Image (cartoon, helix red, strand yellow):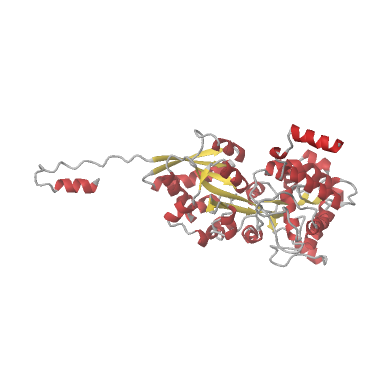
Length: 447
């Protein structure tokens, strides 16, 4: 526009130049950013977005809060309600691709000079890659770790008694040291138990992987769980010696009254597995002293985790403007703003090494465990039936934890694998014989 006005002014037949007028206001693109979380988490997103709005001359972003992931996922299926940019769990990526709800971000970010390899781990980038494209940009990567009550699991007192304890750094340990701590923390007379681990696939996966086993029969397109495989079953056998021992684990009666997290807050269980998102809640519990340590090692370090990404919605009204906002949201300054709330383990490794995340002087003392455990994370296959799979195998997993005498682990793990195939590899209805073919088969059999 400016160039056109200058050329017009050079026309010899033109009259005197008009008086300059103020620039017309620029209409800003309006974008929505879909997120979920606690009030404090939402406030941190609001603050980050406010920073963008103060500097952007072309866009204005509005935070669209949702109570949980499911509510945000429901909004994504409605074209009128779908936010332009949104947070997504990695477990939702297969569903997002199948429903065509996002656009790949790799080229958009590359055009804007975002360096993927400098600040992000290969595992984080691969987690949100599909169809040879980066579908969403990794935002948070929170490995499963072990939370422990430092009064019940007192490594100094254990060492004084000659018990096996982790090294002075106390950021990783063996399974034997974990078992020692679970039994040390148990106070039978006071009803305090040493440890609780949920009987779920996600909670058992770190132990199975650490013992040399695997969860699925294929890393890309699984058709079955593999708990009955020799390595997986042996890892489970060793793990269950502790996790199903009623003298050191929460009883069914206790679990019926309160959740494991609530018992941990009350100082009635020494250790529970969990993620960084639990930290602010635990910090608010009066008198509770806690720390974190990596998941116990049977043969090699291994864990699973919760990974979130920032995605751009298919059908977003202004995709270039959405990509511009995404660049801001991924910047170290913006991620630091969110990390200071205490819930996020940043996928941005520059921020993960700063005090904005580590928060020295606050519990947990060994917050670096969250970042150091990322290298040991095992990324599961992209499947869109996690909910159905969990529901199908949960009763049998609970049986494996609670049956008074479990002599035949091979039988129950084989049963779990068989159940998983009904979800991961269900019969194709088109393969069923027609009525005619069934009749033919019957006739042949009679002949």
